[in-house]
Image (cartoon, rainbow, N blue to C red; front, top):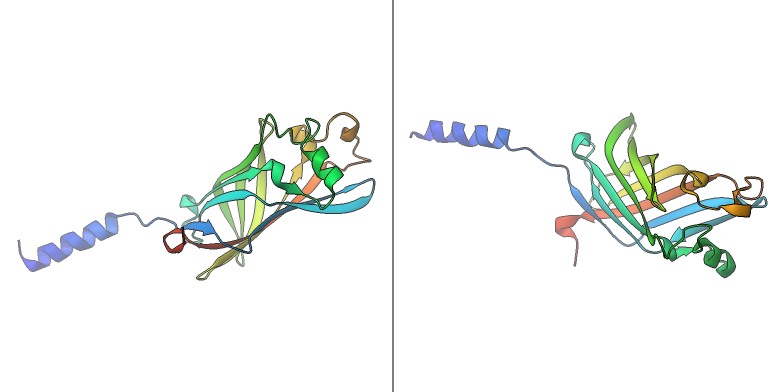
Length: 188
C-alpha cells in the first residue's frame, strides 16, 4: 500500500471515530442549595454531600449527560430543629429513601452561554420532570451555574399539616454552582 493510501485510510478512520463530550468531576467551591419560606420567613439551605457526574460540551449537546446523586440527610439550613424535621417521613424520609437523583439526557441551547437540561428528579420514589436552566463558563475549571424550581408536593415532601401552602410554599428554588475539572485531570 502506498503512502497516500495509508494517509487516506488514517484520515477516514479519524473522521469516522466519534468525538465525545468531555467528562467532568466536581472540585472545591461547588454547592447545591435550596430556598423557601416558613410562615412568610425566608430560609435557605444546602446539601453538603452530593455527587455530580457531568458530561458536557456545548458543541455536542446530543452527548451531554447529567447524573447527580444527593444525600438527603446532609441537608443543612443552619437550624437543627428544621434540619431534623426535614429528615422525617413527612419530608425527605431519609430512612426509606436516603438519596435523591437528578438525571438529564436532553439539552437545549438557549443562547448567550445559557442552556436547559430537561431531566428527571427522583425523590421519595417519585419521578417527575425538572428543567434546570444553567450557564456554562468554559476553562481549565469550567463553572456551571444553574437554577430550577421543584414543586415539593409533587414528591410528597411536607405532608400532613405541612401540605398547607400558606405555611410552606409548594415551589422550592434549587440553585447549584459546580466548579468542574476534566476527569482525566482530576486528582484522586
